[in-house]
Length: 110
Image (cartoon, rainbow, N blue to C red; front, side, top):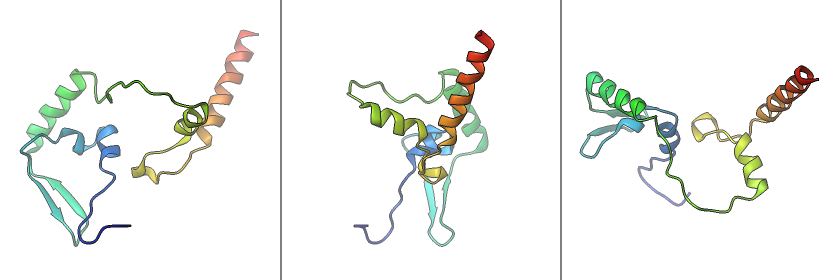
């Protein structure tokens, strides 16, 4: 890419999937160890558990709704696309499982 030096990316997928990054609040200290490629949130386990429970009590992480046009092709891609923390690849088995479930529902109804 177009950067030199330290660059940290793809942290929002972890936040969306409920990882520790979802629990970061303004003012928290995050330690970065370049040699081990590790990031550590310098907050106690007790505080993190309290934050996690508050997030769950509020219904978990939900992105803000926004008005936008999403094409059928993009909707189809979104069904198969995996998060960057899982390799950012398409998982066609999602479609196969959905088709199998639809077939099973059809056989139950007939």
